Image (tube, rainbow, N blue to C red; front, side, top):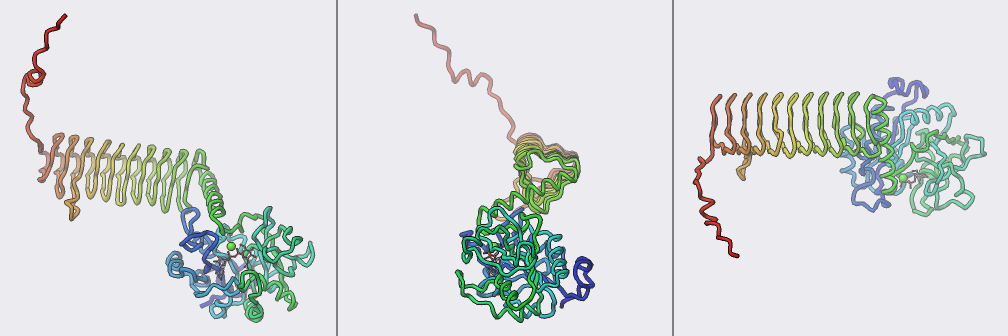
Length: 483
Ligand code: UD1
Ligand code: CA
């Protein structure tokens, strides 16, 4: 149910108190220009779907229960991608244009006075601009308010035809294909964001027609319809044109992604993080990094990764959904996924932490070490050439070079337990399920198939036999030199 706006503190100051406000996000289109099998709004920028950015911003303006996403093309996939936020969905089964998208939302919007319409494919819009647009609409007592922007290359966008240069009032919006050469020179474009009076919109929406280049109902035509009905249509020009850029082509998606990531780096730097060559780093929108952490060139921090303070993340490392505590050193070329790294730990170079890896405080994981679903205790070390999977490893353990946990018998996975203070000699294979007791010692090159009690020495290798003179005899006596 619609909540009276008065209860929503965020818009209270900008709109009249009695107004009930909804947000509609248009996201039903296919995105033909992307030549993709995936719906346009699910293409990603900043590491998450384009639509997710718009939904998040909308949810900063009003409660998700008053937000309606119009879905159609691949509706279920789009619903799955943003459903968790608590927003509502309206299905536009056939996509017959932006005007048609609002026609199908009629019932959903009935309880509201005002609707803010956002484009699901324009993800850089900010909360401030939405609020300013809504406030301008109220102050102007307008029936329709559109967000416009002045851009250098307006090609492809609808152009704003004002009543006169200085007037906020608009006569019509003309689409690129319908514009004459004089109109094409207008650099003030329609951004695809609007505010409407809900009763007036549905009183006049049936006047839309499909007599245009695309044979679609254009929401933009509402400007001309209202103008002729002597209802006030105004344009609110945004100061930052970059906010309204759309993602109709692959080039535009990549351009917006780059803008968003650079902005993310600047935001982190403002919070005390040093990022060298930020244009080479790929940091997703939701990543957090603590102060005095240094990020070297060509680092990727993805998904829900959280990095603590005073860390160093070296070049060519890719951390996805990874929690890094304070004071951690990640050496070059480290790859992690769904892992946790405790305070003061040192990882890499060339380490691979797979899902479920949990590296303890001050622990050390070195080069060519692969881990999976395991815990390495406080201060334990696995410095070289090792595989540790399905393992529970205690504190102060030394895992020698070339150690392998044999966790898979071809059918099932089994666990290796290594208790505190164990020393595992180099080139040992630990055949799981197996347990090495506290303080035990595994001789180098052992194949351990049985549990080892605490403080024991286990040797699991053939005894060495040495045959004196054998090599020399095989080579035979050196031949006498002939002149
Ligand atoms: C639209 C505007 C144009 C403006 C531009 C700004 C129209 C007719 N034109 O053009 O004036 O300059 O945005 O970016 O509105 N959608 C639906 N259902 C549909 C059709 C589209 O939900 O039936 C959604 C799309 O998924 C998209 C949004 O509406 O998220 C905009 O549609 P799109 O086709 O990208 O419009 P533009 O051609 O960019
Ligand atoms: Ca568009």
